[in-house]
Amino acid sequence: MNAEQVIFYFFAALLLLSALIVVTSRNLVRSIFLFFVTLFSLAAIYVFALADFIALTQVVLYAGGVLVLMLFAFMLSNKELLNAMEPAKRVFKVKHYVGIFISLAFLFILLQIFTERDFSQLEWIKSGSPISKNENTIHLIGIQSMTFYLLPFEILSVFLMMALVGAAHLARKDKKI
Amino acid sequence: MNFYLTYILVASALFVFTALFTLFAVYSERKISAFIQDRLGPMEVGKYGSLQSFADILKMLQKEFIIPKAADKFLFVLAPIIIFVSVYLGFAALPWAPGLVPASLNLGLFYIFAILSVETLGILMAGWGSNNKYALLGSMRSVAQMVSYEIPAGISLLSVVMISQSLNLQEITIKQGILSLESVKFFGIWEVKELGGFLAWNIFQAPHLILAYIIYFIASLAECNRAPFDIPEAESELVGGFHIEYSGLRFAFIFLAEYSMMFLVGMIGVVLFLGGWNSPLPNIYKLPLASWTTGMAWGIFWILLKTLTVVAVQIWLRWTLPRLRVDQLMSFCWKVLTPLAFLCLFISGIWRLTMM
Image 1 (cartoon, rainbow over the protein chains, first blue to last red):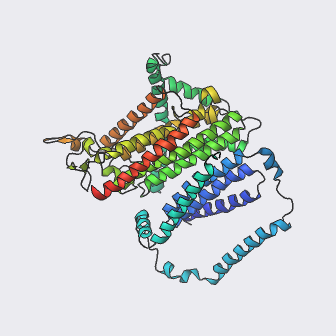
Image 2: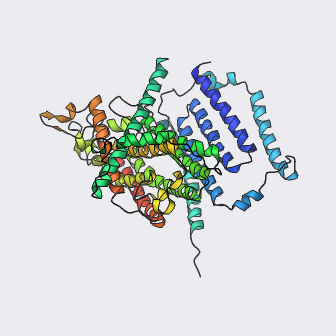
Image 3: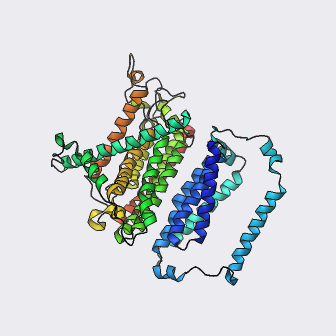
């Protein structure tokens, strides 16, 4: 095993382990902080897929944005309310069936893809990686999103605009009539 | 194997640099504050008190680690490390001289921006882990402030990126001096590629970037929790903010992170707006000052000089201006800085299309 493989397996193991602890831990704050480890090791794995832009976006959006938002929501909420949310002792309860069903279905899809596809025979793996290690990926992303993916790009920007207007509307003080 | 050795050497060199800079900056901060307030400052240890910060760090190294009984030990111990490492990692992508950059990343600027956002998480961790109401309030104020001020800072940085068309900090620097491969225009009209010097800096290539730099500078003050934006550690209200419970070496790490952050944001501003390692002296007809003063050693000298000047201005502002109130802070960010930053971005786009 060379150094890259060691690092890859290290981050993969860290990802799985921290994700497991996030869902099983009883301490909500600790599990949010551990979620950061999960997201960060996922970013490291993106780097191995030569998707450095995605990796950094992952860190900015999830570690710097979503996680901080979650922590804020947690810290601003009532402590009694959180204590009332005791984690259930039994896993197989009626209200858990939906979650169990969804996760099993997702596992099934993943397993099916994994068994049916012969990965070594895939077109884009046989032809070798289309991008090299030192390529300026952000130029490619920019050109692609302004030409080939222009419609999804614009729809996304309209969607973000809607979210912004909605947030401004919610944050506004009620006018007294 | 040599390959990895170089990495370790570069990393330790950067760490030594941040530590030495912090010692130096603490001393100069005390001296500058003393000068502003018409005092003498530290005078006892060494000549003019010059060994004061060494004495301070010696004291800190000997102190006991105190962990409060009700604290979340795991988070409490980990927080200073995360705060420092996130700032320290930012140094990896900064260019020091022509051909001298620890890691020349194509996404350098975005990388620094991403890794600095991890610091907010460390601060929240410290605040929550201490289990102290002042620490929690301080960390929440700090994070609210950092998250809001990231927006004008990021947008003013983007307006530079639009002008120089690159996120690689080394490339952005090269485009602001005599080593540039493209044409460099002073205010978009006068070709100054041969002249170089301060005429080729980004703020003089496009005048609206002066406004962008001012916005970035103000926002960067808020991001390192410096006065006039020091409400997270307001001594008179919160005792000490998020690091109130820390002692000894752990406190030293938070301190180190704060001062390294000052240097880091100053250096990002210098690289993007003030020409990075390019010499401020232009080539004047038969006197090629810019060509003489461009090189490895000169590069390090210029960037250090420029960044230390920016840090000195940060210190000067801290001891001159009073602290802002929370509502003033937020309305200043969202109602003044953010619209102005968007205006800069807009002008950058038009400038790029019409003047370049």
